[in-house]
Image 1 (cartoon, rainbow, N blue to C red):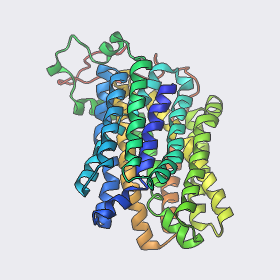
Image 2 (image 1 turned 120 degrees about the vertical axis):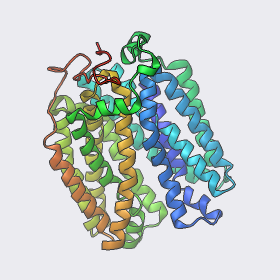
Image 3 (image 1 turned 90 degrees about the vertical axis):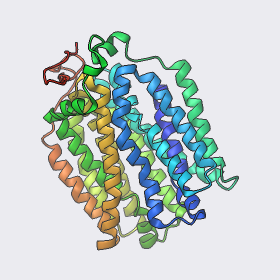
Image 4 (image 1 turned 60 degrees about the vertical axis):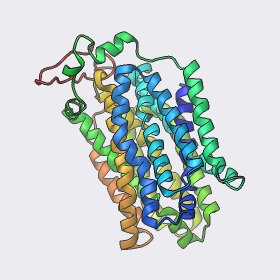
Length: 415
């Protein structure tokens, strides 16, 4: 678990190091605002496309090698960023970073492999805490290193990823035995006759419970990500905050979210279940988003950001755990990869929605729009299945979803 935590933490530290600096690097090459927007979106777009691929490959070849390849790919992407001499090179580096960072669902699938269902939300919360901490330390490291040398932040991010790949190589055991991998992809079936990615996706999306959880997760993620491109503008316009002040606010949100996902979720899930926690956390989520847009002063803003961070920190790991428990053991990596792709799609659509609301309605617009989307997610979340512990579920903590072969019938049944 510590290596998995480091894997996600390092990936998000690297992302946090680069993201605040990316507009300045692009501006040196005369990039327009649209081009900078494409640079930012390219990371999530690459994750959207590659996350299911990494997840499916991890079902076939194991989690450990895919995690290591992703870390090495991220290291190379940051080297390209460090020495980028054009907008094209910057774009290439962000696409490569998105490809490497698309292995997050593999880390989630690893946790699903090694944790019982009743403890899975806590394990997913550890991954969420790594996200929050990465967003705290990443921008701080980038701000310290950038004045030293333009290439220093990229080199630091590359060194972190490479070091973590070495740690994973020597200290991370494989979570899937050869027999388990054979159960996910039957070696008696020829490669030509195995289900294609599209056939596997069709089987995954035939699970109505999985689709419902996926939809709720998409709406919550889109609502939260809608504030990212406009929050600095809003804070400067309403409260006169500069880049340093906004950075402290992001650090505050990351700290609260990390504490929520890394600690409070572990305590609450055994008592109320994942679906119950989603319902509870959706209340501060909606109130926090709306409160940010209506905050008349910085103290009120801090209260609203606290509520928003608590809400997001409670919904995210619970929904990932529900996705894991509702999907087949045969498609665990692929299912979580689909979940990560949908999250990436929400992180593309959310900022576009927030930007449009800013242009149409002004300062409070993106936050009130996001609150409405989060409210829709909360209402849909009332229909999520309630589960506590492992009782009543199939072996492995979820109902099996049969792999569909080329002709339609099941290829094999997971044990």
